[in-house]
Image (cartoon, rainbow, N blue to C red; front, side, top):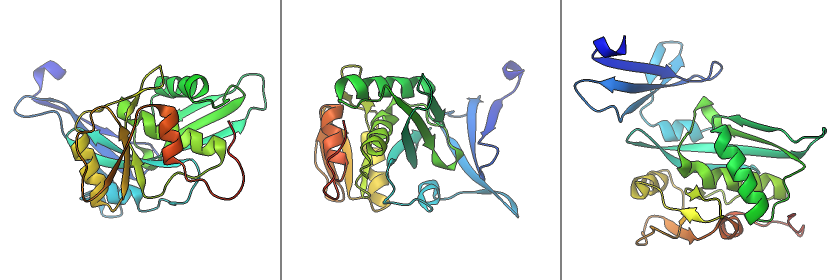
Length: 235
């Protein structure tokens, strides 16, 4: 059927979320690298003119295990909140649950955190979730997911004025992501003061937001988590 039509559109979203993403997988007369964000209200399905602001409007900035990530949906930069929760397992094998993030990326991040960042997650159940019912598939969200897991495990909140973006390699190194400038500009527009980024690919500083470069995941965790109180971190 897709071969005989001019355009193919998919309306995506979780059943219990009011937000929907309209994606184009085929467009004979234009780009497919676009996405529309809508919200179901009493008047019907309405366009969300500022998706980043809408998705973060209910965020509790002081929450432990919460990190904001500047993603790209098509050509549109979008800020989303990734939450994570770790808890000692009650059974023999720890469980891994992914809602809105790729399950394979969650397993990869968990393994790297255990082997390269010194977090003992072998006996921990881990839940990762993207608020708003959205789905993230790009590796650029690796660093945000890792930071959220580390925040929950160490019971230390992340910097509430910080966003994090970067791909995590198997050796624990941070890899650059495409269109970093657009992601950082969106974070600055919404009032964030700092952005944790891979050191590789970071070219210049900015006046509207501070770029905090890190080479490894272990270094990024030390820079991104805000130590409060006198309790030493675990791991």
